[in-house]
Image (cartoon, rainbow, N blue to C red; front, top):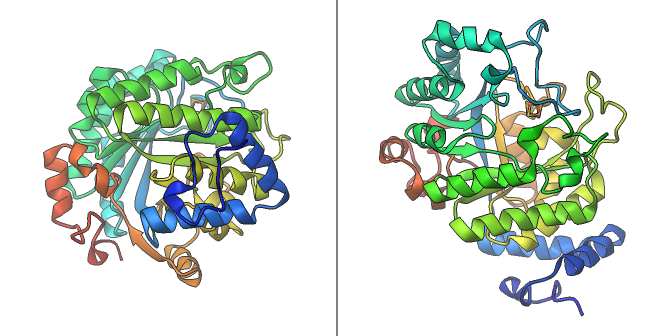
Length: 388
Ligand code: SF4
């Protein structure tokens, strides 16, 4: 018998004991036919445990360097040195972006790089040398310091970092990010999207998340849905994240990112993920991790993103009024007032958060939290005058 009791009157009792993967898959398949019961449970859990506020982070996306040692067959972010989309931001460019971000009222500086570019590309090593650094994480620490001085709060997503690198970045970053994407080793087999991406070996990714937990660093992670994994593997990936969080208590947020095919990639003909199967998985994530901050990016389903509120999310992630989503450049973010109107129509309030959630602020460096306190609304979110 299933240990998932979605019709419970008490959200805290939605899960009676620990549902097995089979329990969860049964619920998933049932909800594909009729999702009403699962969506109602997810809504109830979110409303009870997270309230009726949906957060977002007003950010500027710093495409610091998009050279990458790996090759994922769905990725349009990665550039080769000869391509027009190559980005290697120098100090002047990052300073200009910092000024523009402040002018636009951005709060978060999202610093993104490919996986260890200098390990593969002499161009990346030369670029770092010109800037006066020997590694990408060292340069990221310098950019983060300048962001923090200017009143922006950095969040770095630079792939599989070593412990010393994470320790260095935690001095200036409110949180760090590393998508698990999937816990399935199968996605690294011949013909699969991670075949040429050793950094995506699930044990390595989980190892980095574990290490961040041991270091007490708040982490954002998540799964990429629709790149060839089965429903069972998607559920197992969510359970793997839950296990890491249970051990260390540092996963501040889980992103469910639906795959969107890119014309210049090998997976251009692969179907996009979305619609009911994706929403059902989002709702299941809420049931699996009732207290977790669960995010779905609104630009990946621009015409239907509001529906994810019904599936139990409580965050839209970063939205930028300034820069494109370089990972999904064909998909613009919705305007923040439109997102706010959408939330309001469904009975929810939109609020701007820092790159670290209020309940994880105690894990961030004191220098960062002191600066946050100066522009906080008193509840750990950003005061309206700072971001509007
Ligand atoms: S998804 Fe990340 S690791 Fe994979 S090729 Fe793109 S930048 Fe590199």
